[in-house]
Picture (cartoon, chains in turn purple, green):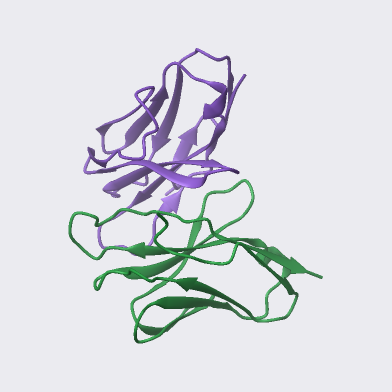
Length: 113
Length: 113
């Protein structure tokens, strides 16, 4: 398997624009996680899904953020409208029930100017 | 409120053994203790997991005392490539929090020549 695949790797956008981050989990994994990492706040769990259903979205900063998982092989994290303080590295991870480890993607570095 | 507490940073030299300790003052009875490693510009990577006593794999050892209020990750004979951030986590074995992976601040380990 190619691992967790995130796209794009880098995104630069202007304030107010819509941004969509994409994630393809490892095949057969039923858990999917979205994280945001900054120097100030560390690695924050935004939301996670089990079997395509959101289980806990308490980490989503505000209504500008939304996440979907339309099927087992794809998830999106959308920010609309984007703001400079959303600049961060966003990671997606997946895990299979009963396994000990989660696998992370390479991340998307988002810069909002 | 962070569930775990660990030192912000540690320094070591090549060839030394490094022990990073994490406090789990409010760990639940059924929680596992898991450690992840993160290199710059990469997502975290699973290192080891345990419940009680000692677990060893090809990368590290994990020591958990009987009261489970702490855990110690031991890295034998570190090299420059072990310079990374190390996170300890508590993972629920079941219940409504099963699957949730919450990262704390982590310990920045710097290995010097």
